Length: 410
Image (cartoon, rainbow, N blue to C red; front, side, top):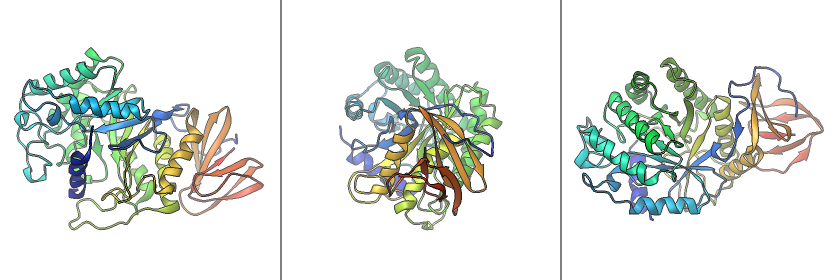
């Protein structure tokens, strides 16, 4: 986890201003429209080279930067950052709160794990949070589409207050947004799922506390980071754990579920020193990126925000898959899947053995097919077959061999 903290500090320092589907029944969310906002991303310095429809402004700027003293506000960095993001043509912004100013901070349990003194604390006086959020929402109403209560409340490097305190902060945010920016979406504090001890300590108590307050959110958010060796199926198991727990605490049907941060982890959490799981590159990286979004929809989540678009040719520490302009696989897979699916209606997926067939309607019907492992056969007739990476479209001739790399059929 320390590598991630170092990365965040570095960012802060460097940022400036139609076949029939057979088999299992379709997913419960079959019929949802896939739009540009379905493809979210993080980018701190550069217009991402992918057609993302929403960007997650993750604690940049932070509460600490914008509210340096009680009653004092400095909006210059936020104004500049928002203008930059809009200049990229990304019209949907999810802003994430975090990083408590030291003057407002309550107690912390592990001061040595903080990025800055007091940054992980719940506010000593909730009125300070109320005043800041009120000033923030009043200033940026209509400019932001979503407000997220906090980043990764399960991680001691981002939050060390209690679940009840975070639920209270979430309720305050929801009340203020509903008063001043009624069309905006309120997103819960995000919970990690790849570090079980952190998840058990905070996630389910937070869900219980949200239930006690009537679920004062429009969206509940998870972060899914299987190790590179764990692969997409491990991510699905993390999503299912999250979904089961959220539903166990009575999530209303009106509350959607989003994945607000996704990649594949290079190390096993809570191991000192960390156990390397290696980078995911080449065709496998393309496969994993495409699966990230396909699996998001087939497990009932509405959005996923990839972490992250990077600048330069140097790998970031913890993300197993790098997405940047000089690396083709992840970028090409993102672009092709977006081109295929944006503007379509997701009709559901079926699974037979290891073969998965996901159907979309965009004019006519088409499928995106893949296997969870190994290879399988699929009769495509004379339909056009297009790989999500490395290769051109071709006319099918009856039965084809399908592998883990997703293919468009139709």
